[in-house]
Length: 167
Image (cartoon, rainbow, N blue to C red; front, side, top):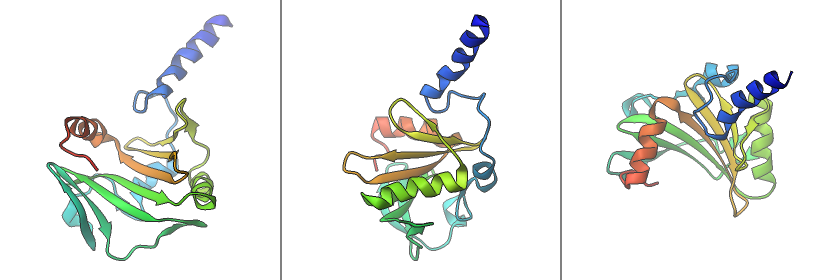
């Protein structure tokens, strides 16, 4: 029995770092969508219509749609941004104002994707084979949900660390 407990605790340790857990049961809804509102993570810039450039970086850019529905269920959103790295969609970020809308965003995410895994830093994570969905509440009370393409996650993190891609 003690060996089983030690083994299970060893398996759960990778959840402390996003991307380290290949043993996780994938979220089937996130798996099926692999993006947000029909926009697929990993898509090329030219494949997504009606985007307007917001910020440009050395090896990427942030875009927003010209016309966007700034809600997710009952949650009101301040913005939705599309982060491209080397011409491929790496992240889709939903930004909710503080207060009830930050809580509503989390509630709506749970309705659609089920219960997340909560990391020690408070970030909540849903995982699929090709993507993650992360939710975090920021110090100012606002909330951020990010659909993150796994294939570009490590490259994008390195580029941000080098200063080549700083949103």
